[in-house]
Image (tube, rainbow, N blue to C red; front, top):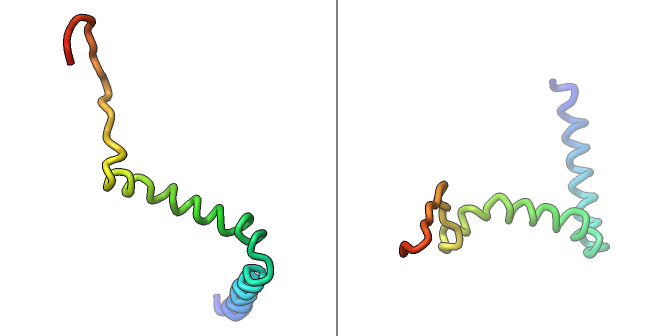
Length: 72
């Protein structure tokens, strides 16, 4: 386990540094490849709570019976 700790830490640090440099040098490609998919996943995962808090989502009735000629 400890044999992989230092190389793993160095690898993660190099990936983070590379992403930061990429974001600084070319924002558009970084946004298209990394930023947008991450933001889309965040919005998708929090949409239910946001929609129910705003009143945009309500539970639909499982069965809705309608009869012609009756109101409601």
